[in-house]
Length: 102
Image (tube, rainbow, N blue to C red; front, side, top):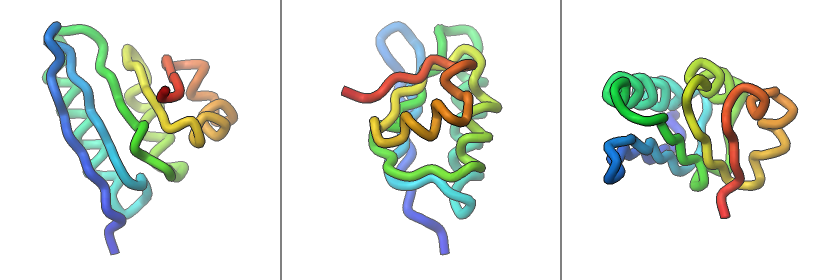
């Protein structure tokens, strides 16, 4: 069974892209998330850094963290504050800009 996941990609006024995810990121839907990030990276290659907004995500598994590591270069990640401890422990905060959502 696929865990529900909402994904949108929006363009800011400066042309940079924001990929927003809502729900849970796990093995059942990780391919959709990874594809959305890959597509956004290709589309924003000539623009500013990519923003990944996970403020509406309340669970992610190790596979999701791995995908974030794959895309860590030149991204800014905004996360639900509940996810900050696991992202710090994983080391993602050392290789990407990760901020808790307000």
